Image 1 (cartoon, rainbow, N blue to C red):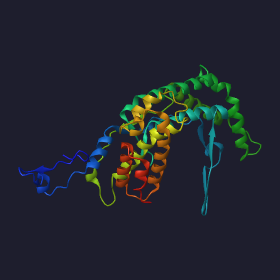
Image 2 (image 1 turned 90 degrees about the vertical axis):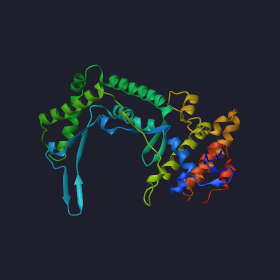
Image 3 (image 1 turned 90 degrees about the horizontal axis):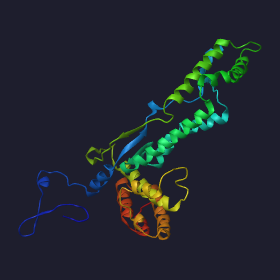
Image 4 (image 1 turned 180 degrees about the vertical axis):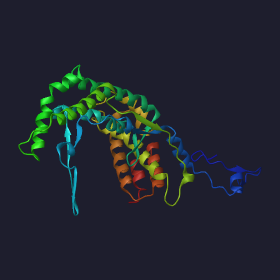
Length: 328
């Protein structure tokens, strides 16, 4: 057995290599690199925000027809669309709560690696740390919502009725000068606003996360499909993460997570840069490695070749050695 590739070679009593049963059948040899990448893929899952569980925005859309006009008008090559949105919250309250409502995606990106356009891969070990942060973030958002709404959502809606009525009247007069907006229109807007706020108050502010197992299968490659692009993106992220942690003191800003725990959870390749005992020595190396990784990502090398070089860098190869093999 080759100690580096894991490739097994059969030999006869005289020490002469013999064809394997697979070769006798015309089967292709196993790719050691593909096997290594497949093992890494099994150490995590795809992770994505379940948009179906996300609560709607806290401001409410209102059809233009409610104000006596058409929501869409076409004139030749041009189209005009009119949409109204109403909120019982002031601008500062709305911005703050909406930022918390949409925070799951940004948080997910800090505990996972990119594997494709908008697709993330999370190590199994990072999941409990990530979900603990989700719990904390969801609680902070719910607490903020309670501070704004108080204990009774219906009372809050009545308290801010004039805010909606004033805005509705101003918008109505843009198309109907001197006329009063119907009280039923204001009531309908308020009912929808109250429903949104109650849903946000009663459920989770943040959406759920979907975890999906992913396999790396080279046999499914074709002229138009290859798994190596995903593998290269994943390995690039795996290599960059600890090096960015070593060089950017602000990387964990806003997270309530232990740095060493997170590094251990995200380290699925036993990265050599984390084995350097003196952090002062590891930081310069991390800077050099990041420069090489950026150059490699921008190169025109094939995805499989990039995977090889990234894994060698993770394994302890010097940045200069890897840089010399990059073909721009």
